Length: 141
Image (cartoon, rainbow, N blue to C red):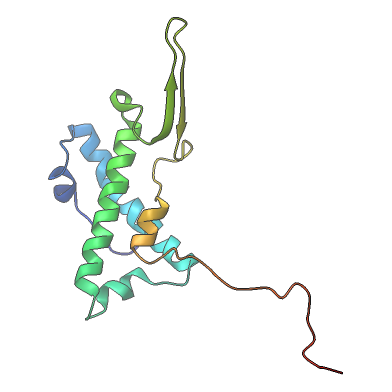
């Protein structure tokens, strides 16, 4: 098991948590850190090596910490019954017959990384290239 990139104290500095949420937060911090390492490895990066880099490591470590804290807070709020709408990408409501409809980022998992978070860490980049569809021959014969 690798390093945990954020602490409970850093999370509680941003949001107040109940004692049961604090217990959940401890395990989520470990899991989120591991998941980020796995996502980085899938894309050919080593997070720990990037943090250890002497030129940009300190700033990169703060960016990683920010992402981990956001992921954990989002997961805790998603699990909390008092804030069911947290993590929704869109919602709609009706009146008289009262109807509610919501679409969630990722309703099947508690921990998830947004694409903009992965882009901020340099783990998700746009790919580009071309395909020669016609196979043009360069010979003038």
